[in-house]
Length: 378
Image (cartoon, rainbow, N blue to C red; front, top):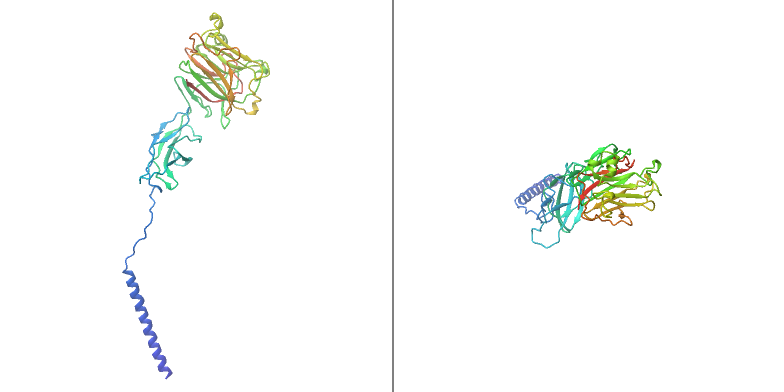
């Protein structure tokens, strides 16, 4: 009896199992026939932009143009606009890249489509840049990459000069001395007869600037020599001591070897020596001298960097000095001097030479190190 019942239950269980399998299969087929509706979502463009805005158009510098090292590099692009007609204020992000595409500097957000990078650029290298618009809602597409060539290390163009002197070379004429590399580098004078010469088109209204370091107070005291940082005149007078001393375009700035070591003297002739001027105080020798109370030059090992500015117009002249990054002090014209080139006698040497040092007199400042030399027409 029990055996009969067990057989009946087994048959029923098998039937139930078969029915269950048939039901699952039918359900799967039904589900497979039901179409799937895709879920809506946001597709990010291939350029990574998340803001519907146009890409700014690079304007300058572009096309591998060589940038001028005498002025600050500024990247400039055209304005972008929102493509959906919104009114959100756009800001701009620039990226400066090297030729391999590696990031050199990011501008952060700017209110206008221009930016002056502060990163130090290698000389004579190709750089790229790009720009995009951004708002708090996202960033637009990057512009096409523009490119430029960094300064090749300096130039002489007519009346103007730019010579960094930190790249181991000069665009001027090197008379001895040596170059020092590194953060405190430049061209350094090794003897009284070392100098850098720059021959320019005659300039009767110019400004000269340079940085000098590695010198202290009273550099010429031990040899009783008034050593010079800077000289100008007609290069035809560079043949010797007397020719330079007597010629009508002589100009030099010196550190006095007497006094307290901070004294200085300026001699600047605008076309004549005093003996030729008939007593005209604004024609011939313009002199200024003080023996004490000058700039606190300290010691050469202090590594102070001094910024010199020498400027003249057709009627005036001025010499100012200050520590780099600090205020300038006007030292010349000195008390008792007018500071004027009078009677229509502008400073205009026919063969204009500018020199760091003073080779005709053999009185260059030994150890003085120069960099960032620049002449600009006014």
